[in-house]
Image (cartoon, rainbow, N blue to C red; front, side):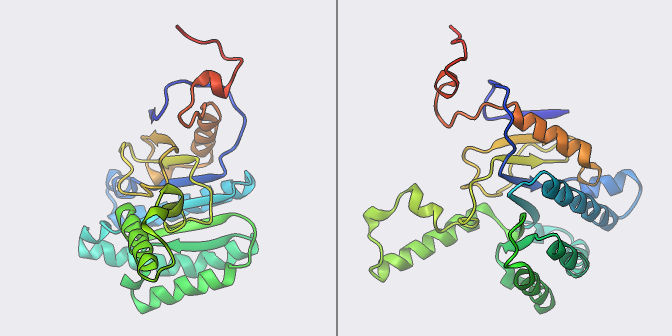
Length: 257
């Protein structure tokens, strides 16, 4: 079952999203259904991630942003967090060279200084190896939170004001856009959340203002090419109005009384 929101009026379209963001939810529940440890679900989730990255490359999507580890995930059991950290290291080690060969540029958003020196080194190596690539922009959100993102932007703006580089009257939405994460990319067009939960969970809360929201009950390890295609087709059916009426966006649309 898929539940959608933002706008209830569909208009057939054909465009592909430029920027897709994904909350990869359901790894633990996938493992539990199979009487396996939660860590097995996270390993299965890596395989699903690899396939979706391949799909984005094939579809010529400009950017894909994945919510890999939130600032709230530290509250999970210590053993699970430790296993996730080990999985991050091993995944970066095994996947980055392949991504580089496919011209993928890998970036990370979030407070990475909280991680071990080993993981920080792998993150740095992945960024440096792929920094000149011009294909898919793969952004991995780790120790990231949307409120943290906005708070950091505010700190930077206040610092610029104190240095005399900005005035208070300069502050507006466009200025804040320049200080939040992913400022170099267009705002997300399509948000996908797997696992049946219908919330954004403090993910890119500034950037998602006009993003189309797609929720599915499919657990992340089971989210394969067919499910991804369903999400893209759903997006293509949306009429993105950005505050306008349907008739303004499409003058041929018959106005409903």
